[in-house]
Length: 464
Image (spheres, rainbow, N blue to C red):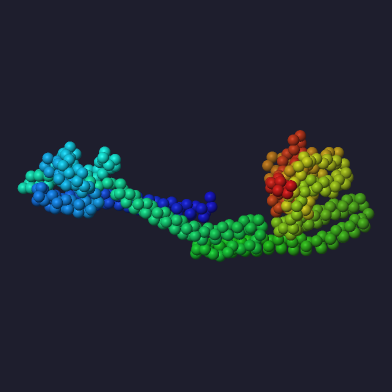
């Protein structure tokens, strides 16, 4: 998961918790408050009407009682009735249809005519809905002479509460959306400099020591970018100094080595005894070995610089060229070169000269260490070229050690002289183009050296 997505998820989680923590209690409080206000208003209106109706229960005051009931009903937005002590309806805000009806069996009327106050939410069979019924007694000299009942539909109240809660939810969603937008901007501002720094680090890892990370972002990020740039510049100077030293030393050594060879050849030419000529020949071999070592050091000093442009190189054709280059040298040592392929040749991106140079080092080793009359096989498949010989192979623990510079394995110490740089050069040249050099013992005796390009199969599929 990316840093930007992680930060955005963290901000979303915190915002969601905040919205829930504030929104849910607010909605519950609003619901309870509205319910309490409705109940309180109904109770107050019923008490007020009961206090006024105690003097209006006589038949001569029915018209005044009716006006008072209608006014109260309009105030509470519900239905208001007044009954006498026996539960018969004296006045009804819904009209004269129920006047004279017996409501004494209604629980709220029964409680109020007995002197108790009643307020409950219940289901009305007549209206087929939930109602809030409030009933209070009409007292005269402390005794109940009637009752006032106020009924209100709770649907309207619930609707108002639901609309308020929906409003709170919309407000919370808006806050969450705005917070997410702000969080996305902040996450981008934090993650973008780190992403560019990571890109610069990848370029450095790929060998481009001239790349620099942009100095941007927070104080800590700018400090990190400056430290990274200083480190990269220092490493670049150190590596360049190392390459320059090796290259300059190699170039400077070529001239005296050439002069030394000429003098040894002159000594050999003037030597009269066989012993002196043998000594001169040995000296020439050492001069040649030292010259080869200087040349290989020069190659190593340039390894990783990508001096040559990358091209699409076909592995099958490269293996064919390798056989052609080394057929004569193998024939001189009576070594037969056998070519094999699985027919699934792919292309890789690299400099052909670098790949040829790496394969030449492997082929030279295979021919030198193979017994006379033996066979060296060159095989290619979808993502690699392998060179197999029937030489002495590797002793325990040598497969990794022979890739170190100047290290010569047990076979090298017993066999032909070399510089100990051939395999490291092959590994360096292949590695700078994404290749991997692996060494292993060959079944039945001998060694196998393979240069693999793990991305070759995927690249080949794209190119087809």
